[in-house]
Image 1 (cartoon, one colour):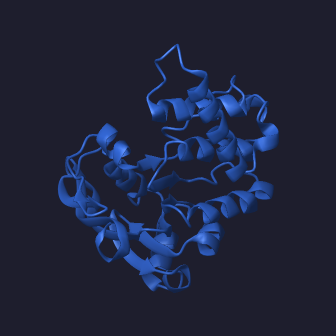
Image 2 (cartoon, one colour; image 1 turned 60 degrees about the vertical axis):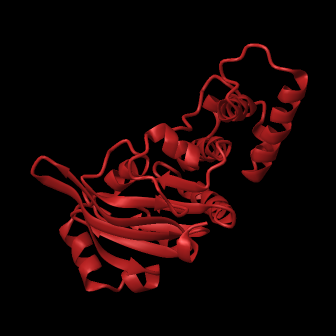
Length: 252
């Protein structure tokens, strides 16, 4: 277990690209459960932080601790094995497979069965049971036999979250889960993410500030690669530095 009930601790994380400092001395504590939002204007460094967490980028300086273990120098595969899973990166949906088959593929990958052509009936039955359990968790059971490409966009997003859950994350990184989602689906996806936070630590980058205000327990605001405010949304939204960043920056 991490110290002080923190699943993840970033200490002085920085990333430089030549003369450009994309992330500058970012420190962050993410609790074992709940939703931690990262917000800020475009170009604030949010995606770079996610890339540093998943090790698709290596930090120039600083450290990353996950559940009390230093993971700063681990490979992307090793970080995923620790249970840090980024949604919409690992969990791309296969459009010509059914919803159920998409879940089964994700479970097979997790179980290391993806390259095995022969599998026992017992293993397949176990995967089938777990698949329906995951579909139930995201309320997609009645779409089990539907090809993924036929799903409305909001349900595709829900399926992506389900395939991410198949990887058994301890820390779930949601990269703009509401991007492209119609107004009618925002509430149901918000409810789903909120329900997952009882069992997972979640970090969410999200531009929809009404969603952030509704479901995030803690907010970190970035601007020009630096943390400019932290706390509950009600607090950070009143911070003059935050208002200045959004007015002075690109669209939220």
